Length: 250
Image (cartoon, rainbow, N blue to C red; front, side):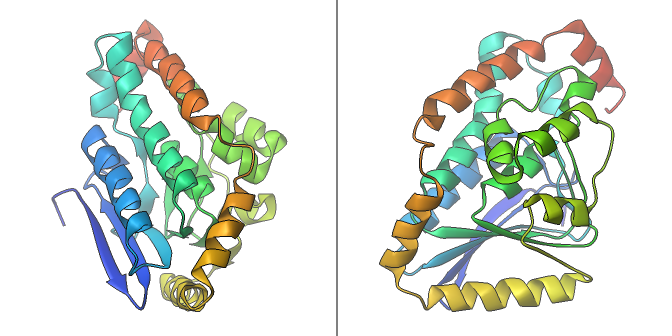
């Protein structure tokens, strides 16, 4: 696989959304835009009762923001527009009327942790360690913070943010509530995801929809909040510190 993509496949009333980018499943604007649209498409498709969010490849679930695109940001508006891509995806997941199951098969960083946190139920394998590296490059996990804090609590969110160069293990993430369960192999993970998705797809769709609205109670202000957070990140990426730091990763 060399070309980035976002796909939607339907099987047994389950919509499988998969994203991929050859650079460790990083997220440039084109992928973020397509992912938001695909989540909305699946949410309105009456043939789908449950959604599974997964990435291609077997080593990294998501490396977060595309550093190449971040490096190219020239002004605050451009920066805000880029980070709004993550805000839009998280809000699409939040408002989607279908339950979203996350399948995390490998390491995930930054915005990828936000995606995992924005699922309604997330399963992983033992290699799915997590890191919030944003402070180490001169910005912060501002856009994804509400989703991550909602799932793991402020203390765990703060620990990951401050220990920005540390990968926290999948078992740690399970203990904090990001993952519901952790499996030894990708095969075992896939079997568990499939079994859960099929089971849920046979439940009353209206009950699932109403239950999801309960899960996301008191997040209606996120449309505004996440956009405001995107503007903060969009300004910070213009700093000399961030520009110089990102050059090391090119």
